[in-house]
Image (cartoon, rainbow, N blue to C red; front, side):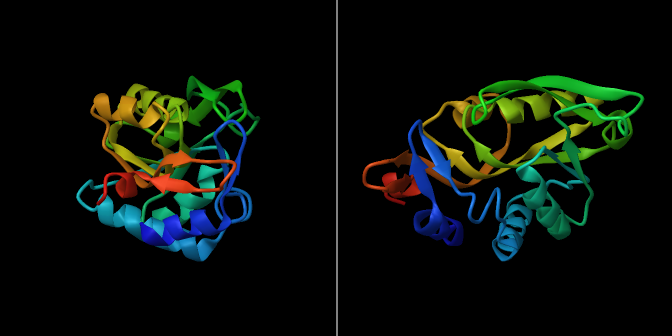
Length: 197
């Protein structure tokens, strides 16, 4: 998705530890016009999947998932990282390790919002080591719902998460796959550019 790649090049900041900061338009301040185009692209890529729900994880994926859901005309469910008083009763839960925060979280979804008969599309802002997506996949599997696939805005192709999920047979659509980035020069190379496509 060239619009997204151009924005990453223009406004993304590379930090030590293979961190790509895109908080000026993606996961802190949000460019909703860009999100609308991202949602349309996910709809185009998953138009055959008969999606009935979108599932994401708290917090950065919520905005993207909500705007993408407008293209699919389906509800969004987000896995919470803490149990609150307004999630009472039966829940699905699993553990997720955050690459960015270096912590392990319990993620929770109320059973009433996810179950048999649902065709679930996972949406998230980043894919690095794949642990967040693995946690969401676990929730879908234990709920009895069907996994339609996963839509990722930015994948770090130089980390193992995406390849590991594809080897598991997960349908994974990443809009921009960063193959390499250089903190000193600020250069970013995307997978399709490396392959000469």
